[in-house]
Each structure stands twice: as C-alpha cells, then as structure tokens.
Length: 157
Image 1: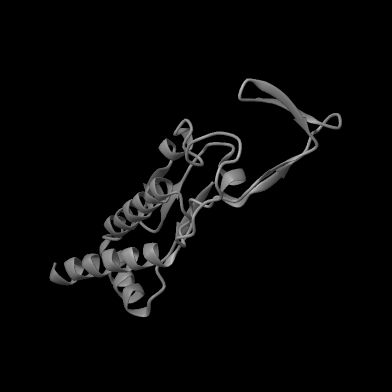
Image 2: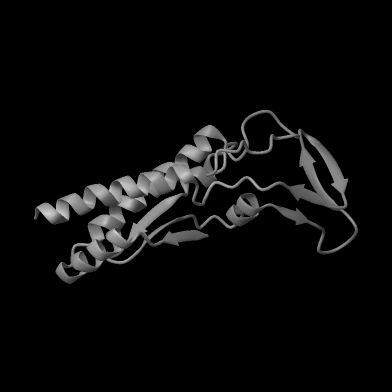
C-alpha cells in the first residue's frame, strides 16, 4: 500500500513548474517524502491516526496496537522521483489494519486460532481501522513548510 501526493497551492505549483524546467524537483519530492515518512512513524509512536485520533485499543493482549513485532512499522519506506514521493509498505496485512476489515472463514463455519495459549473458534473477527498512513493537518502543514524552504532555496539559486 502506498500513498503519493502532489502540492496544489498556486504559488508552489508555479515554483515547481519553474524548477522542473531546471530539473530541480527531485529534492522537493525527497524532502516531502521524508516528512511524510517521519510523520507516519510518529503515528505509530503515538498510536494515533494522521488526524490525531487514538487507535482502538487491543482487547486480546497487553501492549500497543500494531507494535507487537514492529514488523509493520519497520516496513514503512519512502521513495521519490522528479515528480512524486511515495510512502508505504509492502506488508500484506497493512491495508487491513489501516482501513479495518471483517475476516470470515473461507472454508467451514468458524475461524480457529490460538490466543494466549488457548485455541478459540469464532464466526468472524472484526479488525478496527487503525489508520497509520494518510494526510492529516499536521502532515499538510509540515509539507507546506518544506515546500516553502525548498522554494526559497530555488529562488536564491
């Protein structure tokens, strides 16, 4: 799963167009990608969505949501080109946790699995959305700040 973004402000777009003529946009995309990557990791640290809402608590074990093994958090990566920045993960279950899901058995009436050393069987499991990727006001402000810094550097060149 990945999210890519473009900056839409008129003044910033005009500067991007100017910079593209000089081939200098990759640094902007790298900077905004790093900001989005760091912001996503902060969502894990704070156990909250990009909009600042707390993730649903865990009901079957102690600890923080999505941090039992740190596999998902550690898989978050960033890539940038001349015209886009992408932040995402290749972990298969990422979308299930980011958007939530109801898991039902493919074969048979019940899902069967182990929790705390005991086997349980249920008709379905509801995994609440615990969004870690996305755009909240905090990230938008950070990207705007980086775009302004970048624009100042382009103008000064």
